[in-house]
Image (cartoon, rainbow, N blue to C red; front, side, top):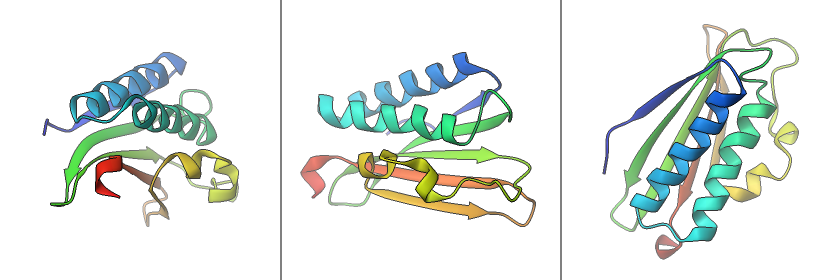
Length: 124
């Protein structure tokens, strides 16, 4: 397992970079092509749903997981300035079907934190 990668998202190029890095990590972890596509598409879709790179600057953190049954890729999105229009899971559309786990939190600091995990098919 590699180190955690953190990408500051200030523009659309940063979202593309995050998507490519997620796919690279998933490939290195042994994910098949469909699993790689799912987690990388979920990454860019959620970044856009959170309005990262446009209205809001934020961060995408990527790391690997292992639970003894299999390996996974975790992607954590953070966006400051949570407001009444903060994203709800329904706003994420079909993205929730591309990952195995999703958690949405609004932290006391006002930061929206969305964590997604995609496990390799061998774990299921």
